[in-house]
Length: 313
Image (cartoon, rainbow, N blue to C red; front, side, top):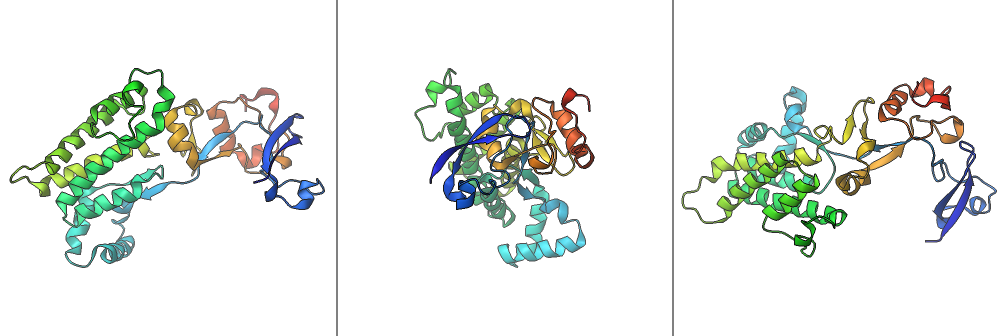
């Protein structure tokens, strides 16, 4: 990398902004100033923006399988993946499980598919033990990625040295105290732990078949409660701007949002046009509601937005 601080004279706010740019990304004519820098590489840092979700993990199989045409293609997919033997039973178990989500694309998505596969293929012991393992992995990841934001917390000294946790209670207490999970989600984790222990420790005559469904559903509830965009209305504006999921500005400093949400987002302005074509972009701060109103009328308002009263559109 060949980083250099570039000063940019802004036509929107008339200020000077500094950006660190890798010169190896530019042509010689751009470096020497003969040609302008690429659109988006420099921008006005004073304009209003929000974070828009740009990637997601999707599983709407159960909802789609009711459609006859989609059902055929889905059955063909699962037949290829799970085998022809007892495929109707496997599909019925999938429908009974009834899991669908539109979530933050963390690693749980592919791992949960393996848990779901074990259950639908009637491998109940494998489904229960893998569900417990994935629940513990999610718990560990939540702690490890957020704990350093809470160094002044009394829970921190109990957790900061460890790289993994097989005792769930202390990390769950910390996550609840920090507001990373709710008390309801904590209860789901503890219920999952109980079923996980029942599956792992010898218990003669244990009914894996009947408990598999409950265990996998519990895991799915944990995942959806924490990571699902449509469920987390406390973090997101979901489709208030048609087709878009936006991060609420009030949570941008939340450690969970910083670590798990923002890496899958991009900054957007209210208008879907290059900054250089509109010199009257709204300047921050404006409310999320005002931003969304502008976003919903971006085609017309981009051309006559008046900065005099950012809140009076």
